[in-house]
Length: 264
Image 1 (cartoon, rainbow, N blue to C red):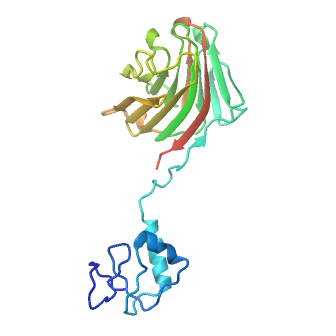
Image 2 (tube, rainbow, N blue to C red; image 1 turned 45 degrees about the horizontal axis):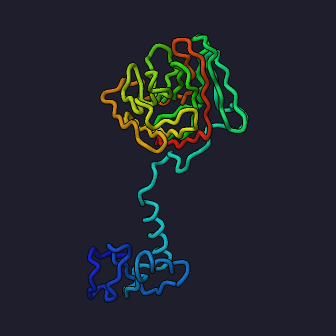
Image 3 (tube, helix red, strand yellow; image 1 turned 180 degrees about the vertical axis):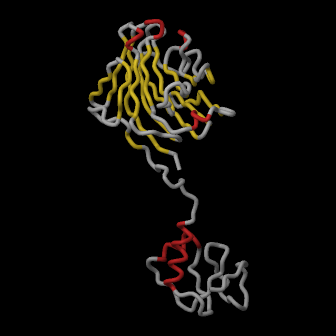
């Protein structure tokens, strides 16, 4: 094969036709209409040069190789979202603490009876680093009761807190926003986006130390953590929280939990 870096007609390639717009491929063989007929729309007229350099089989192999090198999602990453919650079981999840979690018809429910000791966590058994998470939530309007989603929750004791997308009431100082040891972004601080006692959509994307959050389709967090502690960048479980702040009772519900793993 003798490729030419110019697509202009020349003595060496009288037809002046190119493959992929950059390489002029020469062959005596006339390409069949099928299966390469679709090339007319994608790459123009099929190449028909006049020197015996490349046969049809080699041309097909070259095309497949070129397509294989086209930009795509990184290896190991999911192209589609996958359900994270079964319809009627908590398979793939584990509980921490005394809070009760129940799931029926794809709807997960937990709550607090006022005793602060009954707070708890439900976390995935699998660990994730970079991902997109989508879910719907509905939360009680009671005092400082709040919930949240932990990202890369550490399994080792004493290393530090995880990133948390808080779910609560802005009026009670617990808005939907991003928290660590303190607020990183207060997000919907004044409850202008969250709908009280109704289903709300939440989307979270975390890649390295860049975290983005959308509430009901509106972006409320776009935060990049500079120089995070090493444990914050390690894969960890995704966890849901119920927390009766200051002993307040309340409930929270989740549904339509879907995950796309972006880890490479």
